[in-house]
Each structure stands twice: as structure tokens, then as C-alpha cells.
Amino acid sequence: MILRSLRRLWVLSVIAVFGAAVAAWPADAEGPSPVEAFYLKKMPAKYASQEAYISGIADSGANTVLADLPLLPDGTPDTLGLSNLVYLVHRAKLKIFIILPVRALPHVVEAHPAWEDRSFDLAERSVKPSDKIDLFNDEAVAYLRDYVKTVSAYAVDGFLLGPDVLYSPGDGMGKSALKTAESAKGFSPSPKKMFLEVKDAPGTLKVNKEYEELFGKWQEMKRDRIRSVVEELRTASRAAGGSPRFGMPLPVTGTTMTSADLLAHYALDVTMMRNAGMDYFWSVIAYRDIMKQQNMPYRQAIELVGRSAFAAMNAVKDVRQCLVVIQASSADGVSLSTAEIEEVVGIVRKSGTAGIALQVTPLALPSPVLAKKLFRLPGE
Image (tube, rainbow, N blue to C red; front, side):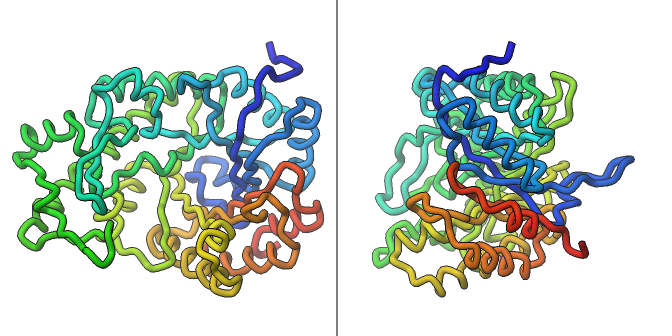
């Protein structure tokens, strides 16, 4: 039974993909479905306000809501929060996508210490606990399968896997991962020898030439495990009878990243994941947050948006699968001006990407007129 009032607050993130994202959905007998939506950083506290808010999204011309998975303090899914969210979104005739944390489940790791991955800190040059799940641990992956089944049972329409599913160069030092490297792959990573210290830029990735081949094998091992686990999660998501869409995170840095760069820094192979049936590759360009953190001038930040969008499109190649998240509110939660929103959207569109995610605040949805203008598909 759907409750008329929520017993707890949860913080939600919703991604709206608008524009010509028609091929982000694989083609089927009826053709691809365009996605147009909002990214909401927080839902209103009161249920009546939530109803009005979701209704406002539908009235704006959007057709999709994507939200962070609501979690309980013990790290398990908040099924009450999830059921209310799905109910409101579906009642408004919108689709609901969930952003799913995969490895960054610290409460789960705390309850199961053997499942924790460890990571070599490039700056401090030491191995530390990561608070993330080791995907090479079979028991941990079995937990993740059940976790996805639980969420899928609430009739969600898709999942975007969180950035935590990826492996940094120093990740993969957990017991299960090292055991796989030694027994199945025939090598033993030695991070202090593999990674050279860069004293004038601590934390910079610089691989010892004598260990380049070993580093490549290590990243490929992590890449292959990510693909294998994601395939298991996709299969698990269909246990309730649906076929949720899936998306992989795609980090962008403002510069063009080659396939070799993505493999070295994130153990990510876009072509491999696309061939495995991935529907989306999504990137976040938090330019307003960067402006505040780095005291960056507005024009420089706008240039960063353009470079990052082009970098994402260059990595994905397929215009129909590239989704870009941009901010429509400041780092302090204040809605941006109509002129700025339109400028940023226009810059991202110049990259050729088909999907754009617009992040807004609960009290500052763009006007229906602006939203419908932004959601308009090219050629309309």
C-alpha cells in the first residue's frame, strides 16, 4: 500500500536527459524512446509538496526522473522511500531511473570486513582501506545481485551505475583482487615499484617503464571484472520480469581522453561495455561547484563545460548514448539565470551529444516555457 505521507526524509538526485537522446534506448520494434528529464538534488520534505513538484516536472515537458537510491542508515535500500518515489513518478506518467552505488557502500563493508577493497594512495604512497567493496569477492557480488533484485522489484525503469563502480589506478589491492591476480593472472602487483613518486605533483599517475606491461595487465583484469559484475547485475535486475536500462559512468576532465587514458585511470573500456549491451554513458560537469572550489572565473568555467562535453562525446563516439549532466543551480542551491542555463545547454549541444542532464533545486524548476524550449528535440 502506498503511504500518503513519508516517515523519513531522503535526499534524491534526479537526472533529466533531454534533447535528441533518442538512441540512448536500444532500438526495438517500436523504435527508440527519447528521454527528457530533470536532475533534482533534493525532494521537498512534505508529501503534498512532492506531489506538486513531480507534477511540475511532467508539466514542463519532461518524461524521465532519475534519482539516487534512497538508503537506510545501515546501507540497505530504503524501500519505503523508493516505493513512494516510484509511485509519484509513475502516477505522473514519467519514467524513473535510479543512480545505483555499487562499491561505495561503507555500512555494508563495515558489516563484512572481508569484502573491503584496499587502495594504494599515490600521494601518500601507502595502501589504505577504501570503504569500497572488492568486486573480486564472490560473496560481495552475490550481495550486490540481491541488492539489485530488491530495487528492481519496485518497477524502476533503469539504472545509472554510480562513479564508484570504476577502479582508480591504485584500487584493487583487496585480498580477493590480489588473489585473482596471483592465481588466475600469474602476477603480483607491487604498487611502490609500479608507480613512480612525483614530488612536485603528489598523486599524479606515473608508471615505471619497467612495470608498464604489468600495470596494463592489472588494469585489464579490473576492466574485465567490472564488465563481468555489471553483466551479473543486469541479469539480476530482470528477475522481477522487467528489462531496466543500464548506464555506465564516464568521468570527464576537460581534456580529450583516449581509450588508453580511460583504461589507465578508471579501468573503463567504453567499446567493451557498449558491446556488452550498455545503453548509456553518463558524465557530470559540475562547473558551478568547480567555480566555487577553485575560484574560477565564469568564462573559464564555460570553456571547461565545452571541453568536457567534447571529451565525453569523443570517448563515447555514438551521439545517441552520451549523456551529460550540467548544473542549473549554483553551488549554494540558487537557481541560475535563464540566460546562463540557455548558454550552457547550447555549448553542450555543440559537442554533438544527444542527451543532457539538467540539475535543479526543489524550489527552482525552470519555467515551463524555458523547459519546453530546452527539451525540444533538434528539428522540432
